[in-house]
Image (cartoon, rainbow over all chains, first blue to last red; front, side, top):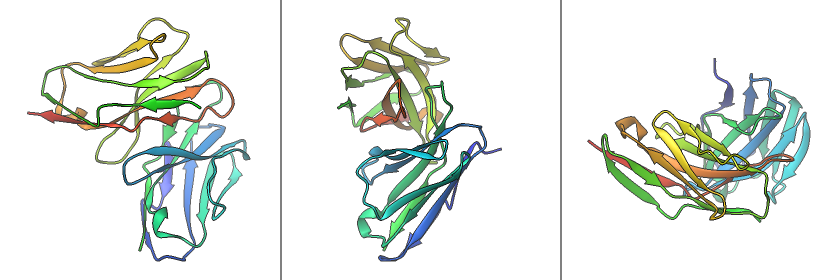
Length: 112
Length: 115
């Protein structure tokens, strides 16, 4: 069973479109994250949710809107996609009291 | 602000040999964690090893071990008996032990294993 799963794995879309990436974890973790990995492989935090509450928003354009319907899910919606949004987006989760985060397999978003 | 620096963009090693990947970090906090993550071509981020800052003993996981020098803010990863499956990007990461505990990553080191 996949612990942290993201869908889709690949997403190709045109500039100006709106798209969503879904993330689900079956580990019972209460904190979830979105990270962005750019073309140079650099990883950076975007958002963090704890028990459905937003606790980190790292100067991400407001075209990006995370939504957490429950503790096990954290979705990322992106409006008006731009070429610079092309990247790999990783979902991750962590259990309270534990240090390590577990990552999904990533979603490669390509904006053309 | 916390920063993590990996000064080796690429490293290579012969199969069965030992290689050390370097990482330095900057923080004013005293309670934090350090990690090494591996990203093979499959793109999956895999936790290799972690170290609690309050522990003096270096962490070890099978062929992987770290050299944690807290005063020098250095956290290197040693891979012994390198195997072809160790070929990947390796990321050093830091998180403070409070709040959201976001990970701050280094730039990564691409490790190649030569058969």
